[in-house]
Length: 250
Image (cartoon, rainbow, N blue to C red; front, side, top):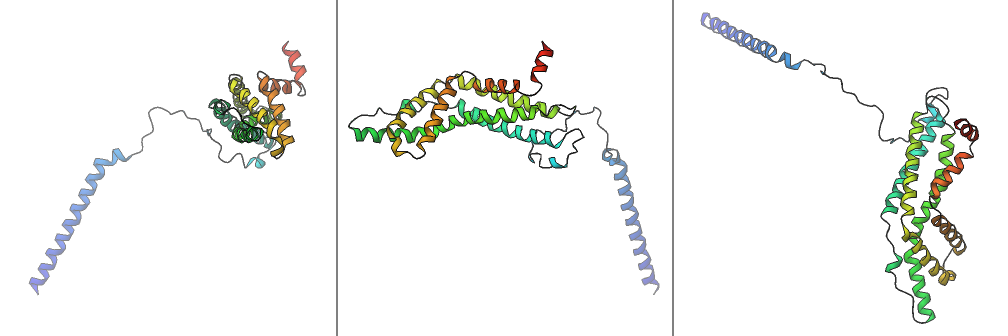
């Protein structure tokens, strides 16, 4: 019995010694690594903007804005429309800049009348999607002018900085589009071949009247220098208060 009791005591002392040793080791680790684990403030402040570069929600919560606050619901709507307009304009810039003449690669119609008509119809079908891309620029002009002027009329309060920035971006895109368009002589050349082919196969084309009218409008659009900026300038001068502002600057 005495031997059993002694063995149990020695075993207890051994466990206590092991626990004490473990606690000492943990305390030693804490003393060694505690300074490194503390959160230290940065020595220099980092300046960063909390304004997002992208707007994935497209201001979907604009109805919750207080009209008397910094940003009204109308201004948020205008900013969303202008951002979409800017993105669409950048796509047109890319398409217009990379546009190359298609008509130069088409063969000249020859042979009998039936063969000529078939070749003109084929030329029309080849050129049609490319001319439609150019017509998108013409349609973009009307949309850009209307939304630009509508948003410009909202810039009356101190919280219109975001709206003004969106307007300046759209204005920059419009200027770039005008510049690229004026340097692309191939646009008018392709339209001339397209109109000639359309004239010979008009009876075989659906919506011929609409295509005829849009072709004439596109021809006038391409012949004008800087049509987007000219239309935008004329529309801005028609806004209420534009004349007073001009006379005040003069």
